[in-house]
Image (cartoon, rainbow, N blue to C red; front, side):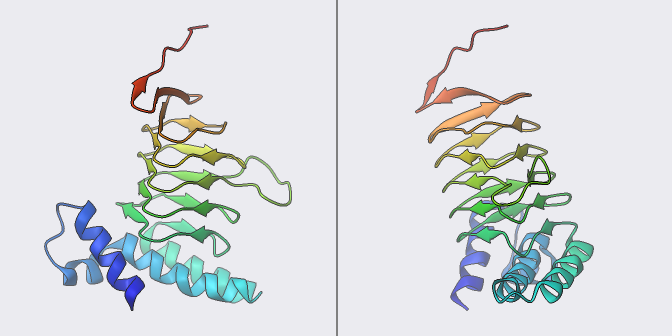
Length: 179
């Protein structure tokens, strides 16, 4: 129950358009998909893979958000809008992360083992950003809209572009050499 209450409070804190708890419970896909994920992840951890994947498929059909049941998600994840969001199997997401619609936390191939990103605490990933491979996004970092992140991003950084480059680090603008 505490996790549900925490999720509702997180949505209210992050989305100024929300007017009531009932609105969240009845209409908020980011809230719904997390509920499905908690159940799917429970079965996945017990190696009931088919049941876990069926639950995840139902969640994707209902919400337009795909979270693999193997993904590990921290506390107070906020998914804004969410349509088209994809979170891969070996993804690890820290606490107090914000993800916008169209974000992909995906792999880069068919290898075994850790194939998806690790997202630190208090990270914001903007709309349509693609974070690919077994890379790490550091704590308190921001990824700009439509960025394609293929390398680790340090703590307290802002990264933008294709491929993404760090443009701010610890609050200071970083000067990038142009090729």
